[in-house]
Image (cartoon, rainbow, N blue to C red; front, side, top):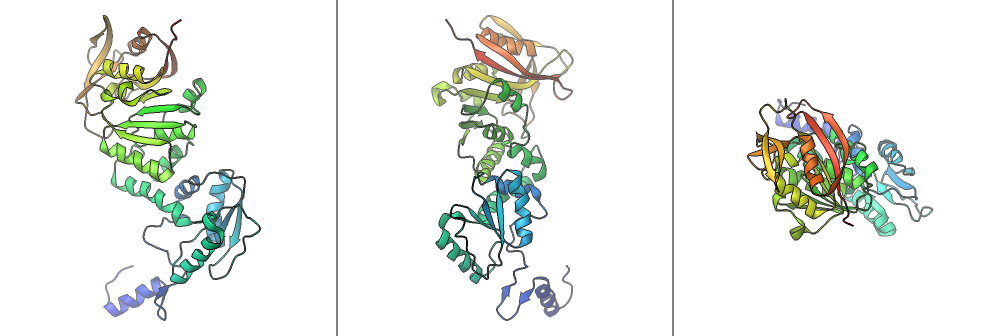
Amino acid sequence: MSFERSPKENLKRLSEKLHWNGSDRTLCAEVKADLVFPDLEQQPAYQKLIVSRLPVSSQPLMLLGSKTEIDCLTFAFTARGQAVKGIEWDKNGEVDLSDTPHSRIIICRWPLSDDEWRIVKRLKMRYGKRVIGIQELALPCTVIGFALGHMRYFLKSLEALTPYYLGEQYFGPLHKLNEVWPLAGKSVIEFGPFDGCQTAGLVRLGVNSVTCIEARAENAIKTMIAKYSLGWDNVRLILDDFHNVDSTKYGTFDLAFAHGVYYHSIAPFHFMENLLSLSDTIFLGGYCATDQLPPGDYELLSHCGKTYRAKKYNEGNGFTAGVNRFGYFFNKEDLMGFFRDQGCEVTVISDEESAVTAGIYLRFLARKIPVP
């Protein structure tokens, strides 16, 4: 709406737009509650993020609100296997929930007046922590939406990002890794969490804990946002250079997870030795050089009397880059050969041709062979 007329007429038009009640100077219930709450009817991604913040319970969930508000969330909850009971309620009347003594109670509309907040307070005094306001679930999720509008993400929209955060899709073949080496209950150290999508997959597949190592502030912030917004209490984030991360400083883990990072290393043998110190099981994935890609000749890199083929390349300085000016793409056989030379059994998870950056994208699991 435009404001090109007199101040008096502009005020009248604004009052009509907002359903302003001139007698008590309050907004009617039809008006949006605030300036930050997402439009859940128009944004299904927010619905899915919101309901993910509550664990599925055997007790039915009670939704209080208008039919539209109840319907808006019912589908998202039932899609997760949560039983739902809706009770139409306009906040002006009392509601008896005594027949559901253990159910959680979601108030589906943000209160708009002093009276409404007092009614909600009475409900909380009567039913305690079982009562949850929709803003308690929704506001943490709006941090993700805000960040998408102000920071660089690999996936550009909430609709594209949400399936990864909820474990409906995996950023890389984590499901294949999980088939070969079940992740449930394991402790993991993850290098380069990026936007938090890989971390989400590890969490959704049931790991006991994830320690994320990140050197780029922008990516660290995005991972912290995901941790907060989605309630990942078993995730911690540490800002450090991954060349500085070994068992002496951080201890040992069930799995060292290095997906899409090894080729950012300016000292690759040092980094891979660190991985071997951190765990007896390493998941490593990344681009590998072929004769054609990237252009140029192989260099021969030496380690403990053996040589390995790799192509040096210059890094950029984007959010997908490492922190050093150059890195190395190894020949895939030589990359796996390094771990075999260190006494590991190597299981290929995926081996795909690529026309981007380098000619192969390889993922494998390297497990130390016990010494008799």
